[in-house]
Amino acid sequence: MSMKRIVLTWGLISGGVSVGLFLATFPLADVLGFDKAEVLGYTIIVASSLFVYFGVRSYRENVNGGKLTFGRGFQVGLLIAIVACLCYVGALEPAYYKLKPDFFDKYTAYTIAKAQAAGASPAKLAKLAQQMRGFRRLYDNPWTNAAMIFVEPFPVFLGATILSAAALRKR
Image (cartoon, rainbow, N blue to C red):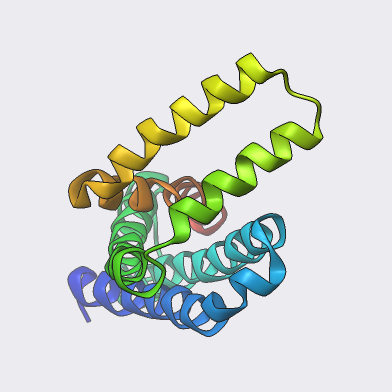
């Protein structure tokens, strides 16, 4: 077994879990509301990031003879994370444009209503509406949208990578 095979295997497993759970729960987003859907989304990301650990451990045991430096573990974990995040982008990018084309309109209305309920002044509400229009322009660009989708789970995966590399290092 090679590092490339382990990275692809565990990255695709992790990405498949996040995509599968995302697609299974996607129809619930309107029922749950944005706050609960966000918690559910990050729970899915955390759950799928756990596969980084198993991938790094598999590399240590099957390729590196039971030894692993932090640097090599970090490298393997980071590559697994990148593959998983690219799977996530591959699912959410079309979902944004095809399955929920009104997502950003609903999110904007929710954000403004939440600020209103918190007692934001008309000036703050106008500024918020302007910011949301700017975000909308960014999200409507497929490349910028893909970059923002990639950045959403990446910090969680980076944390899983660092923890896995530290926990699994063995000389």
